[in-house]
Amino acid sequence: MAPSAMSRTNDWTTSLSEAQPVPYWLDDPGRPRPEPALTATETCDLLVVGGGYSGLWTALLAKERDPHTDVVLVEAREAGWAASGRNGGFCAASLTHGLANGLSRWPDEIRTLEELGARNLDAIEEAVARHGIDCDFERTGEIDVATEPYQARELRDWYAELERRGLDGGVEFLDRDAVRAQVASPTFEAGLWDRRGVAMVHPAKLAWGLKRACARLGVRIYEHTPALTLRPYGAGMAVRTPYGRVRARRVALGTNVFPNLVRRVRSYTVPVYDYALMTEPLTAEQRASIGWRNRQGLGDSANQFHYFRLSADNRILWGGYDAVYPYGGRVRAEYDDRPETYAKLAGHFFTCFPQLEGLRFTHGWGGAIDTCSRFSAFYGTAHRGKVAYAAGYTGLGVGATRFGADVMLDLLAGERTERTALEMVRRKPLPFPPEPFAWTGIALTKWSLARADARGGRRNLWLKAMDRLGLGFDS
Image (cartoon, rainbow, N blue to C red):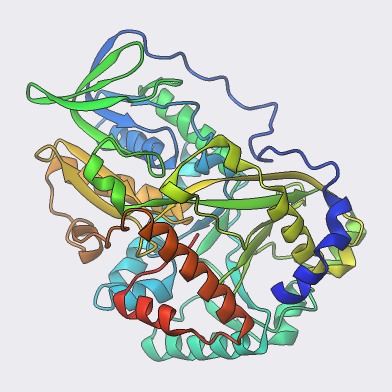
């Protein structure tokens, strides 16, 4: 899809003429008002730093485990404003950034990891219902689509491998006619439909609903309250904020892409900027022209991949392809808007759906996510077990952050559980090197991945070496 699309990009830039450079999900008049900032000294049993999914799930689960636990949550801006409110809304069961990545890294644990992931997604669905969270939750599944003949062969071979290993439950291979019967695109050559392992959600409403649920259970939430320092204080820890301080017996860090308060953790992640477009609502005729009656999430099989889905009001979110790493790993607001990527994405969109010519985009946005060298989250403790952290979700944190919250709470409690016994939890990925080596390595990897897409999937010596070392770069 990509090579032919890029040659036509300029044909479709008029579709962007009215696109607002703000995340569609956050552009909502029902957005909750922020809680006041902390302006005093607080004490608590558990302090949670970060008001995205990671922190919100941690606070909520801590109260559900023990309602008497005194929990405080601090957020530097507003709950859900960053990656948790800007993502594509794919809530996946996978804890390992897909089955293929998990199978290659933890083959002996993969069945346990898959089972834990399925239970985690079920628990999210139950929590959404139990707490009355209106986040457009739809258990539609996801189709991994092939847009080149070699990708179709790879999908068929992968499905055969899943069957051989007995890991094909709920997965269906779709040939060209079958996948186009689901979603009508002249670029689709085959598909692999995971029917139960992915749900679609409104990501910002999920974050806002978790915030309300936390508050109802007694979590004290302070927004516009960045955590500046983390230091031991007596038998616990103290976190300084601009106007106050929190003293806590235990601390859970859910800051992800932002600099971790435990400095030695910072080299394990780098920020990657991901971008997306949202169309205006489709008419009934436009919907009929593409089918998509089962409303699955979709993603293509290229290294530089796209992800796309329908919103509740029948818009199409179209994102991915470019994964931009800023030199030095800086996270800055000016990187959130990238018109050259929007133009590229628009061209790709109309190559995939030429029958939608004339459709307009209403929003275009970007933002940073954290990635690590193994693509899936890692975990750990600091300060003699009084601080826990989870990071490195690499774009699949909508569902996996709830599992990460459980892991952090297990670690803080000093409990050996099915989760903490996992090799995935006990071991960390390789850290990224310092600059300029990080930027050079990532740039070479991105160039190699684009070249592989253009050469029928053939990986060069650099990518083969990275594969042998278990290293990579993804969004």
